[in-house]
Amino acid sequence: MAYVVTENCIKCKYTDCVEVCPVDCFYEGENFLVINPDECIDCGVCEPECPAEAIFPDSEALAAKWAEFNRTYSTQWPNITRKKAPMPGADDWQNKPGKGDLVSTKPGG
Image (cartoon, rainbow, N blue to C red; front, side, top):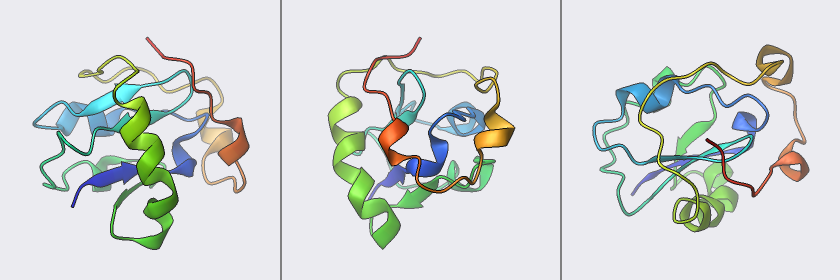
């Protein structure tokens, strides 16, 4: 099992989760973060740190639709290991439903 970043991260990109990850398995897109499931050790320390409540175990139904996205883009985007400021307007986008179509596949940095 691994953890997965889901839709609620889109246009927020809080990085509190990144700071606590003991194996540095987060990768940064333009407006989203992903977890590399092959690097995740299932420790779960990232989940409670996410202000957007966007991280779930891949065994949960909500995470299932984002699992492949996390796997794919964690091999294409740059690794992120340090906390940085969230996206402008993150607090306004937090918990807004239906953001899936707004996810960018461009790398962050």
